[in-house]
Image (cartoon, rainbow, N blue to C red; front, side):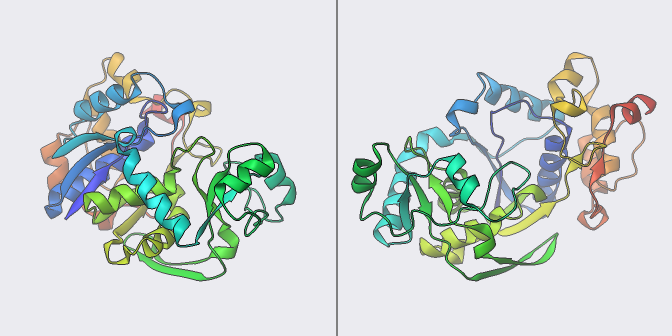
Length: 309
């Protein structure tokens, strides 16, 4: 029984990240799961210098520990390449030379919050090989997974029964034009290789799950699909997930201001259904936490509410 903490060093951990990681840790320690720390550092242009060590320091300060790691995705390129080659050889992945603008112009589906459009399949079946795609277009192609038209059903252990039509998800990128693996492929390869059995994360990744299930199946790893728990996010007063626009909620900022971990944990404790006072220790939180008491609604945070508190 294994779970993973998987921060991405594209920025500092904030209160929303802390809430999810803390719930994950509490579930693991209550249920006897092992914990691996995996640094998801493959998104090269967005990686911030020393953000990995800052995340490690923040987790330690909050009282979160792990049994293995840190393991860095950038050290695992061979595993991703092997999986990618298998998917291409099986005919379920293909080269794509479309630009983001071309995809947005061609897509009929509405844009997601992150600005991505559902890919309309322009390059599906267009090229016989990656080399041909590059020769004709004059640029290295990305690689997409052919999601087809099917239904993916699964039961989320927190969010309940889920059903997704793959036509609404579109063919998704599994390797970028610079040959680095995309998130969906890397996380499946890593979770399977590490033997991850339980994945606890924010519900902004709920629609990543059907994509990942498709990859598990295509790689012959269906028996290794983990149990998923997708938790409501911490959002700002504008209804959008917590970010810089809502104010400085970085754990490093609270640490630098002299806020104790016990005090910050008490704030998060109230967000996860634990009746806490001004402070709470990890031992007290571990004894009091019950997943059934975690609200199914998103947590709304605002700077004015924090000041009043």
